[in-house]
Length: 141
Image 1 (tube, helix red, strand yellow):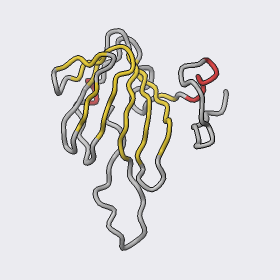
Image 2 (cartoon, helix red, strand yellow):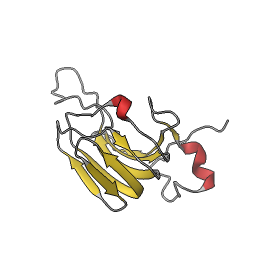
Image 3 (tube, helix red, strand yellow):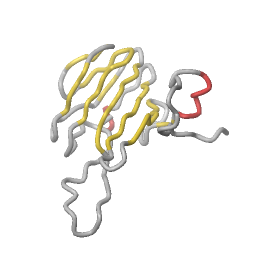
């Protein structure tokens, strides 16, 4: 089994879809066999994450229900199409969706499979006595 690698600031140019990048993808927790993810980067200090999520054809996340977060999240559909049940809308390649804090989205399903680019904030540890603001859980997918 190959060691999974996360790109670093020194990894300037690479193709996430190339065969040699296959070992960088991992199953999404709770969605094994339905979706896999690839973290492209995490901004130091802010915890902002840029990630690709790839849904297999026929994937359906109804078992997870709709999601809400305390921080904004944006999603851009790179390829394929994805149905967002909370918003009763098909998102196709080229669609952009912005989830303000607290907005419901999902569950999701796809017939043909799809790849989405997500940008969101994860929890960021702060020094004792400093205001961290709201702790933001990870992705909504």
